[in-house]
Image (cartoon, rainbow over all chains, first blue to last red; front, top):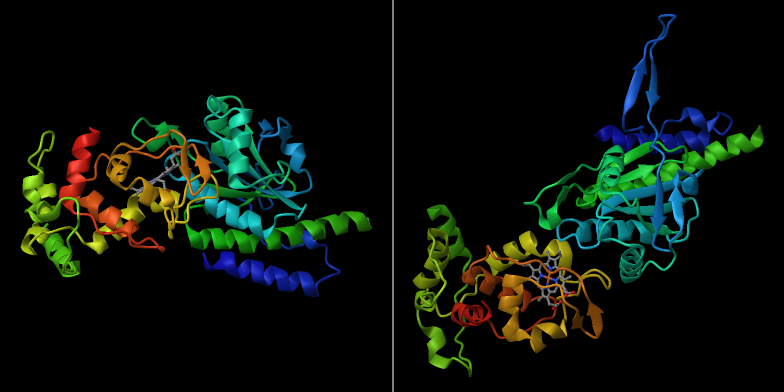
Length: 224
Length: 171
């Protein structure tokens, strides 16, 4: 766990001192999610292949489509919620709102909250929710629906949020409050418990580290 | 359980002398008698909650510790650590005019929850306020006394007797 905090600091110093190195070699934040270890035919060290966030196509509170392409070349923070959620959502969303307020206009990062109750959370409901949370610009923070409940659960699982229907849970759905940080290539680079102030603070610290990494990658591309 | 009761007694601050217009002497009856109304089942847990109060003349419930704990457990996730609410999604409890304007209805609101439109400090809210059917009248009293004496709120403390009477009406 210590490494989590040391690595970004190390990476930052490396980034500033080693300008000539391709920034790609600096692995500041880990890559999370499913991975596949493929043994190499020549007997060399096995390759680890990370799974990116699968393709999704959502509709946000402005009625606009939101897909992986929406975030191409940019980072985003995502979580799963529903408008009438009586359990953890208000706390989770208020924590995410704090993070949002640190980067309200930075085009390199945006926010995505996906409903797990698409039957209730129509575009109009999502629009009202966003406005009530004080989010005027849908392109900064999308509140979006996949339209299909089962598919929403599936996508949630890919983004490290466990969701199961549970008649005993408040609101009928048991889920955890993961905030996932996704990079410009679609890899999950951090998962934070949105109910834990310490972890939300870690997310706030990790975002600039990731943004610096993405900036580095872009510069590298531009130089070529 | 006895450990629990001892802690509660320790954290109980003796009530200041207090009287109120409505209820008068009645609110100083032993709280248990208030619970004999219809629909109230006395489970052991409820009795234990009353014990420390009985031990201290039981005029009204002023166990701030319990109210604070219950708030953190059941309410803070929505209304915030400081009763600040969440933008225009969840109304604040700090400085809420609803608390004073609807004082008598609050025990029922907490017990039953609601999701109709509600105006707090001039802002309309329509979201789910969940029910808290598992909280006893004593717990609701402590909870309300906690809310109504924090974050700038200053209301006369409630007695279990009053809260019980108001609960009887909302069922």
